[in-house]
Image (cartoon, rainbow, N blue to C red):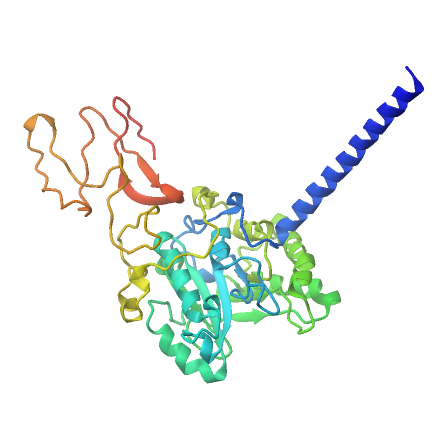
Amino acid sequence: MTLHSCRRKLRIMGNFQYLSVFIVVAICACEGMKHVSISETLSYKYINHEWMMNIEDNKLLSAISIPGTHQSNKGLKTSKPMFQAWGLHNQLDAGIRFFELHVSSNSINDKTGSVQESDTLRYVVKTLLAFLVKQKKETLLLRVTPDEGAVAQVTTYLSKFPLWRDKEIPTMGQVRGKIVLIQSSTLQLGLPVHITELDADMDTKEKQMRQNIKLASEKCDHEMMLTYTGAKGENEEPLEVAKILNKQVDDYLLDLKGGTNRPHCVGIIAMDFPGPKVIQTIINFNGKLGEGSNIVGGSSNEDVVVPDSVENDGKEKETAVSSSDEEHPSQQEESQSTGEEHPAPAGESTGEEHPAPGGESTGEEHPAPAGESTGEEHPAPAGESTGEEHPAPGGESTGEEHPAPAGESTGGE
């Protein structure tokens, strides 16, 4: 082997060493950033639409560990300072269930164009309601802090919507499909809450965070507890605080979870720039949630379109969001949901009953006109038993039964 060929092989090996080091560094950096969201988009791998689905109906809301965001609607780059990378839709998709915002008199239902639409109370409430149209097993918590001059306007505006305003802590079953109001310093609607925050001293934030979460874990069985872990001081940069503190929150929760005296809950934890890792750690504090916590694909990663059923202020009390059992398709040609029932896509069961073959009478009612759902059931082909429920597109369950392919009996759910 010549000297030249030896040098060449050494150079190649050296390049591979540099490449391997680069890959390791990239992996570590990527893993670390899962505690913090810095991109406006959310990977489909981290979508978590239905994690509340299998929480017991009789469990108190205070006893559920809930991931939340601080200054939830401050996600635009025009917001100074900026507290979130994701818009509300991506926060919902990622599993966030507590939201808070500050409201001035001109950011309630702005019609002058002086305020970004996504900064308005109207946008926030209707985005949350639109999510619950499809995810009826979830519940969302909202804390609104209006300026002193906007309290009356905010109170009047919120009265148009089917929100939970009681002061007694409800069970999970009582508030599925609803927005639950959490009291703030200026708005006494909804549930009272015990709040802890961090001061502006970065050297003491981790110690304070641990003390505050520990306190929450001791009281959450019977009291609503809210722990803020984001930036507080005017001179603090929320993203820089989140890069350090979000991982510390995650590490401490894992320590609590693995300890011999593991608490049952940690209450609401509201963060700046939360990433999928710390969100999932909070969710996992609720124990094994089964299929309801599975990751679901098909998110658009953009702000949700408000259905017509909650678009008109005069009809907001009649919206199907709060209690309607109407079914909504998850794929339509139109960009907006109307809140009406629609026929299933081609090849799927619409829920109507049809006469059996051979002219035999089945005793069913006549199907409704085209495009309307009657709520009747199709009989399976002769000799077949389906018993199988199929999820609607996008990970949502419609509750309809569909026939199995000819000659097959599924019997599965």
